[in-house]
Amino acid sequence: MGQIPLSSELDLRIKVEKMTEFQPNFSLRTLRISFSENQEGGDERADLPETVGNEDEAEEEIPVICYFILSDAENASAVFYLEPIEHWLSPKVTLDRELKDNYKFTVAATTDCEGKRFPNSPSATLRVTVDVNDLNDNRYETNLKANCM
Image (tube, rainbow, N blue to C red; front, side):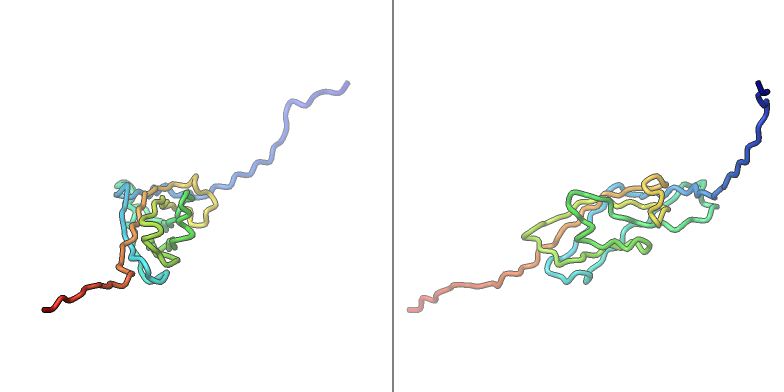
């Protein structure tokens, strides 16, 4: 029988990537905004609050923070457009208060703008309620009869 080798060689390569430690945070937990009904999609927009980091991160370079609408039961991403880098929200469609008077969904802020590591990347969430303002879209009619003597 042959002798069993007591040593072996291993070629190991380690790739180190710089990972940001920046943790985005919203100063609010919830946000309530409103849009008027019967406006063309894209006519109105609302700015969402910016995120803040931890105080000890003040000296670090702040990475780009992207916002996304998380999947939700109301399918808000089909109704609203969220600009990921500029952080504003706008209806994609004409809203009608008589059909639906508000929408509720969650917005996530993350350093993973390409979505490769999300939701495992540092992120923060904000619960958003969008109220649809009622406009009087019915013609006002009166039915007065004058009684003159």
